[in-house]
Length: 99
Image (cartoon, rainbow, N blue to C red; front, side, top):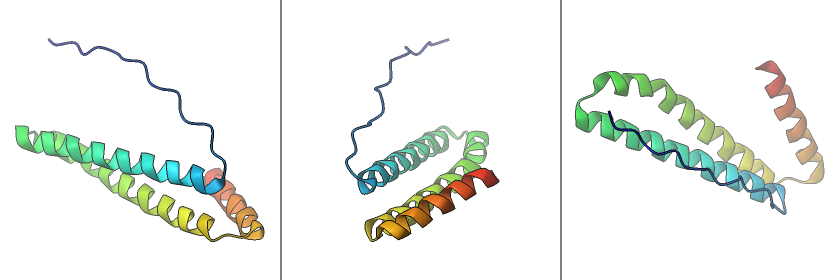
């Protein structure tokens, strides 16, 4: 049995200067997550591990939905005036309460 070493994670960024920078960082993280899931699927496929591929399918779907959602929010933030930003904040808060 091979043990992989545990490595410390870097602290998340917290020095944004605008809402646009925040959402750009979020979309970058979502895109990285998507790429990592694709690498896992590619590896599973290469090993013939079809159970792992089936396991990953719902995560792929959820990840693509998350990436689309964040892209939509980023587009709204890029062109938003302060009133629209307040509405977006309210809408996202209500959405979180529904989950």
